[in-house]
Length: 121
Image: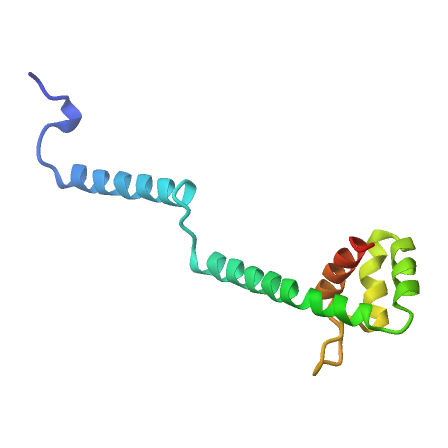
């Protein structure tokens, strides 16, 4: 059985070509299908995940503050009348998204709070 010309001989070039092709194939499979990520991408994903977790933890506190505020029933009715894209601003202006120890409100918490309040009866 004859070997193809390309595979004949023991050339270091063939070894180098095989190593490059193997590395390229490994990276394509790893990053494309195996879920590998670079450090920067992993840091962004971790930051996003932590922000989402903090917002999810603080939104119920905002709802609690909203419900215990004077005129809560009227405020809820007014919130439900407000357009959905302005409800976060409504909660923010009401001060319910401003947490203890902070001077500024958090818009992400206000938006999540407005979403939770929108589901209340």
